[in-house]
Length: 142
Image (cartoon, rainbow, N blue to C red):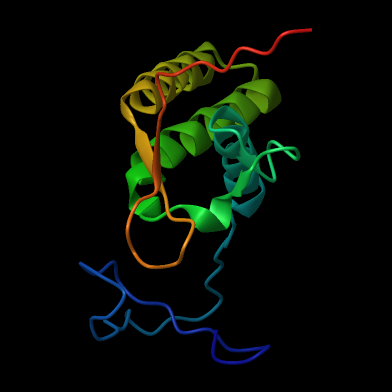
């Protein structure tokens, strides 16, 4: 965002570091800009809860900040966010196709979660002190 009243829009680029590619000039052009931050936060809480990390697991010994390489959860997160987005669209439009897509992305999320491994660094030395597998299940005695 350039200012409160001006925004520079670019054609899609290979990465955000490339130079902006200007669009053709136009008048009365409408754009819709949305964010998926709420959905991303929900998936973040689900993942931290699954791995027993704070904030998803308030009593956890470790926090999400202790994850050594967060990129290990990128694909899992994308699948989770996509599932939530399509579920929301299906609820608004009552469209079976959106429900099918939501279920499809939820299945991808579950499979990717089972394959994922999170390395925990307790000493901030860049070396993993603990590894948690997404396929592991925590059991608690009541």
